Amino acid sequence: MSVSSRLTHDQSRNGTGSRNGHLPDEIAQDLSAKIASGALSVGDRLPSERDLCTQYAVSRAVVREALSQLKSDGLVAARAGSGVYVTQRDSTNAFRFQNFSVSDLGRLEEAMELLVTIEVAATRIAAKRRTAEDLKKIKRALIGMEYAIASDRLGDEEDYQFHQAIVEATHNQHFISLCQHLEASARNIIRQARSNTKTNHAELLDAVQDEHKAIFKALEDGDEDAAAEAAARHLHNASLRIRIYLA
Image 1: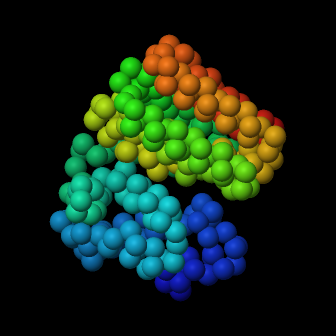
Image 2: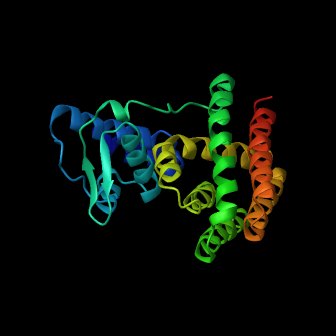
């Protein structure tokens, strides 16, 4: 069975579509194999997101996560307004934030140490540099999460957009590039954390949203210390919520 056929079969069998956490991995592995075999050469343009969605019979969110994994591996690079191209892998792309299950507490703790350091620093800087347009994007994602909760959806995409919009509000290309590099793993943690909370502790979803609101309020006020504290509190509580689920 081909990868695209297997993905379609898995969706039909599980009824989960893009909620199947293995789909991005399988697509990334399939595209990696094509690059390794020479079917896709350095400089080749990958099919568009829409074409990849059709080819693998998955949602755009799944395709984006798969492409993020390839970017993290240094196998492809996005060119603004042009598309995603196969790139030459070199030592500058050697760093790899490995995906893992949040049930692996040792790996989770190490990952959270890195993400907290980056997120808190970015939120502090964003509070100082955010523009009115930045605040609109952050608030749009915040409202999107509220609609997701009301509609009994996971809201992981909106959650990621909220944190990504904060990083972009730093207007620091190094922060933005680093977070793009970590995108696949960050999405993986967010998805698993929200899924655990929604499935096992739905009553905590309002608390999660209150933490997001506190971050937005500090950003809106331009209060750097409050923004950093709210971000640190949110990530600390996210880690605790995962531990509650595992216990």
